[in-house]
Each structure stands twice: as structure tokens, then as C-alpha cells.
Image (tube, rainbow, N blue to C red):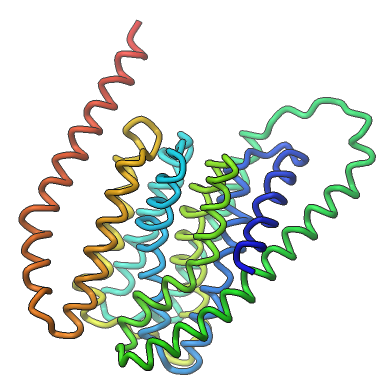
Length: 345
């Protein structure tokens, strides 16, 4: 059902973008991203009403990390992803800003209804910016007598979108129930369940959609789906969940000390990677996947008290991170010099 729903959603989004004379990137950032994030909204609301706030908050953080490192990583392995300049100039900085905003609001170890209103207001502002961007980047409309007969195909495309979203949400719900049962049987804590099993399960619709878009050659939708989903998760899902929660959402100290900084770091990582050549290569996709593997091993080993946690932390802090920063600085400087040479007559 995930594959079928993703297939319908991608095809319908491409058809709608062509008929509405809108770039596929805008469709990926809006309809595709928000629709495939619907399971995350359902999960966070159900967890909050059941007083499992660690799952509600942890699943959003874990999903944001998974979306970038795994979905973009796997999509880049299928085909190197072309990155639009709009993403680098607008959407990536906004995603970094949303991550910073969540980090700042959660610094007192809770998210109140007022914090939820602030996040939702930021989401509305982003949608307004996206609408203005779609108008400025709209493709020129050529007079076509067939436009008078385009209402029926446009309606069928909308039906395909709704059917695809329905399949994604229902399949995600089934998969989530199975994942929670397995996690309970393994004795995992709520924080680890939220960051790993439930976050991955909630992100599987995005994974199916982006991978299928990459296979179809719709790279704008593959990348836009990830960035738009992260913005919707951080601003919309957390904002609405904090607003309707009967009590403020608690944020664990471990999330503040480790998970939220990792989420922010992953968002910042996108900027130099995307800027260097405006593409995500297969090598960078492997780098993303390796970083997620290290993060997952650290979370599980730290929670279960395995000695591996200290060794992993030492390896990441003193070897991997310095090498990663040096590589990103070098690639960003090389990309800036290359573009500067092109602009210089």
C-alpha cells in the first residue's frame, strides 16, 4: 500500500504541476510533503492524548533526522539529486530556523500551548512565502483551446492525490501498530521507541514517495518532499500537538543534550552539501547513511548501557566531526570559488 500510494501521489503531483503551470519543487514542498507527513500528525496526537509525550516529541525529532540522512541518502544512491537554488536560498535556511526555534522553545524542558501557537504562526508564514514563491516562479501560460476541457483531467489528478494520501496514511497506521508491538516486546524505552522505531515508521510514506520520485527522475519532488516534511513536522505537528495537549509536552534532558543538537546539526549540514554544486552525489548519500547508522548505534547503546556508547561518542567528537567539518568547508569554498569565476567577466 505504501508503494501504491506513493506511485499515485507522485504521478498526480507531476500532472497537477504541469496543468497548474507550477514547478514540481513547489508541489513537493507543499502537497506531497504535507500529505506524506499526515501519519506523523496522527502519531503525535495519539501519543499525546495517551500521555506518552516522549513518543510525541521524540518521533518528530527522530523523523526529522531520518528524513534527511536516510531518505536523501537512499534517494541520492538511486540518482544524484539536483538541488534547486530556491532550496539553498530559502527553504534550507527556513528549516534551520525552524530547528533553532524548536530548540529554543524546548530549552525549559517543555512545550506549552503558547509555544504551539508560535510554531503554528511560523508555519503560516512559511506557507505565505511558499505561495508567493509559486506565483513568482509560475511557468508562462500559453493560450490553449484545450484549457477549457482541462477541468476533468485536473479533477482526476486531485482524486489520485487523495487516493494516494489515503493509502499512505492507512499503510503507515498499520505499520506503526506493528512497530509499537515489536518495540514493546523488545523492552525499549519511550524515548528510544520515538526516536527510532516510531520515527522510522512514520517516515516510511516520505521514504516511499521520495524513492519513487527519484526512480521516476522527479528529483525536485524527491528533495522537496524531505525539506517540506521536516518543516511541517517541526512547525505543524509539534505546534498543533502542543496547542491541543491537556498539559505541556515534556522534553527529556537527554533530548535537549543530544537529540535536538543532532537534529539542528543535520539541518545545518544540508546547507554546505546542497550549496557545493547544487546537487547531492552518491558519495554524499553514503555519508548521510553512515551518519545515521552512527547516530542510531549511539542512541541504542547509550540507552541500554552498553560500553559501546562511550567509544562511539569519543570517535564522533574527536575524529568524525572534525573530518566532516573540514570536508564541508573545503567543498563549500571550492563551490564558492567556482561560482565566483563564472560571475567574473
